[in-house]
Amino acid sequence: MLKKSGRKGIVNGLASDGKIIVLVDGRKVITSKGNIQLMEEDSFTFPDWVFENNKPVASEVSKNRIPDTIDLHIEVLAPSRINDPPGSIFDFQVRKALEFVQEAYSYKYPSVKVICGKGQGVLRLYLIEAFRGEECVKLISEQHDGGALQVWLNIK
Image (tube, rainbow, N blue to C red):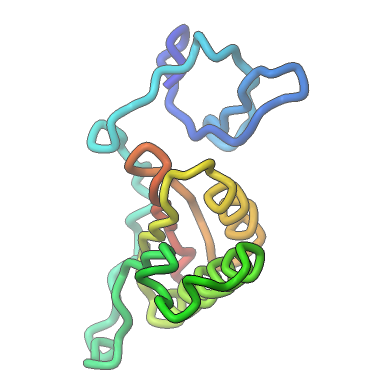
């Protein structure tokens, strides 16, 4: 939330001068760190359009559906790869996250959660950019202090 105006948005990155870029109502706002107030995830209200027409059709429900959450921690995702080189693990995590979002979209899930872990935030930032490039992604929201991403899908 921007303290001065009370408007709510999503942090989109850092400007070259160290200020923060926030997406507010589809527009980029550049502000100082002091004007940002992090909100608890329960206090954030998504716009009505996020929930429009997002219920899966009953005939699509089957025992073959995927879960609505993926944990990208390598010890959970693929324990056999735990000793792989870091770059290989990173590429694997990104590929699995993108495949997961695409599959959830095919099942007409309104949203999914991607647990990326807090760490240094490299995987999270990379995934945010990667998801923005996906046509099926409508909105991305950081949760649990950046340890997870809620990905809202563009279900028609």
